[in-house]
Image 1: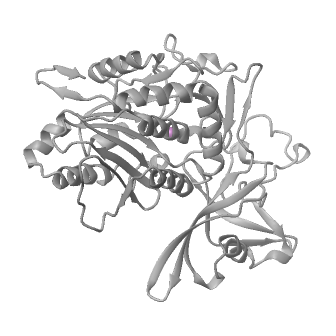
Image 2: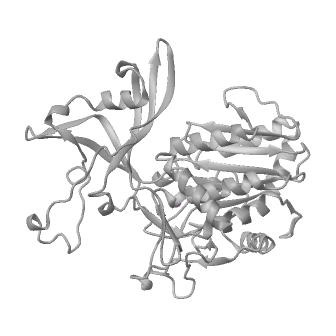
Length: 437
Ligand code: CO
């Protein structure tokens, strides 16, 4: 059973080289499953028993179902659509020595630089096309081995294996072609998108690794692919959301935000009003009072899902002394005393109960006490809309490499736990007392 969702995950990743493509693929699946698309710029009228979604910037999405307008609260799963990459700058072509054309790019997010070298890369993203007074977006994917960032030979840098710092402006620019290709980059982009070169008025273009995802290991224990952080969680949440039983008590909400890798502080990031606006508008469209909206938020629960670090076989001392996540051993609940992760006694207790009901194993993650570690979107989102939240993820290696590794069994664990989660409701009874039913 777990193999099939892992295979589906790999094919989703293959079709999702950028956040725009990931959201496009989620949107298409939702439309095929009978969801109605709402627009933030238009009036919302919601019907009991119907299901909806709304996107922002085509890179973030929130989908939900309204079984009954007198629901108790929201059951929310959040993840992020973006991954570290290199973004193509405007006027990107740089001629070198009358021999090469390379592309001017800048870093998006905090990637491991070394694995970007010496592997076939391509370019994908979003174009804005101008047609008279109208601007229309279109996705583009060159979808072939297109550019490459070659290493400097060991003979020219004898210290290459002694630790290296990479200068993004000098070391990380990919080769587009020989000198004859100058001024043709946007022609190739236009051709790939099947649009006129002159119609392109704006672009958001990113490099991505061409290496397809794979399953490997003595017993196929592992998967490797790009963007596992965080599309592995997005996809597993999505499957759980789609497969959940009808919920008459609460509103299941599936949310994916862009720009987590650069701090979430954009109009479509977790540090925006996207989630709070959407929940408020659901309440208004269901005819609820301001007070009923507040009681719904108090009785809501969010699972903030973003991948976690598995113990690394070559660096076992980088993990906490006791809480040492392993791949294929279930969902990782993430804790941090300084609240980089939202998990506390309340949300941990509730989430563990959900895992137990779903018969899904879980484990715990802390950073070593002498390592600051990363952060994620849960606490950022909570500063806009404050509700009980747990931070979880799936164990992986090589986070922020263009080719990451995770466990084959874990996507199914998360999908099963989320299916159970989306079928439940939480009631805040005050004074630290909650009921999950
Ligand atoms: Co992440």
